Length: 193
Image 1: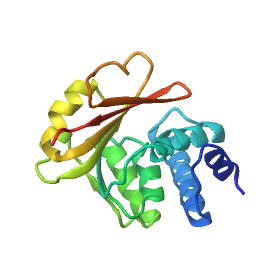
Image 2 (image 1 turned 90 degrees about the vertical axis):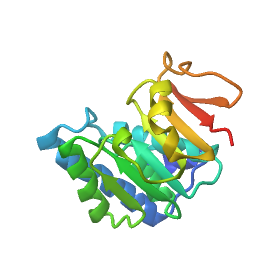
Image 3 (image 1 turned 90 degrees about the horizontal axis):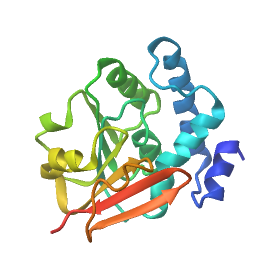
């Protein structure tokens, strides 16, 4: 068992050999692109493994979903690891920056992720789609993200924001749940029907 598969299983996430292979290939592609494009500050394997765990940990508490939009997908976290493990759901990755868009598109093709669509745009420019889940990691204030993407989330759908300690309280209310793992706060907000 790879170190990554072992780390995930210790956290209640069990992956197949094929999924482990795709996750590791994703990390290798990111390392390769990092050399010329500086997509992320991560350099060591442990950092990549931690970023993958951080990305997929919400699968331990999320309701089932069939469609997801990731806002500001950047270097692919959390959307690509989620798409690899949740191959029965369709993912739309929204990234306005050319070099990051190019990386996401290249990685989608290399990993043969037929459940992924990459859009070179800002979320406010999207006008189609009704998603069960909208995620974002380290992009903007949660309330601003909700306002920008509300028209794209189905009634009863969920926003999932990957936040640090200080920004976990940007929204409150009865429809907000916060899950914590290490120093990450996962803010889950349900859209009222």
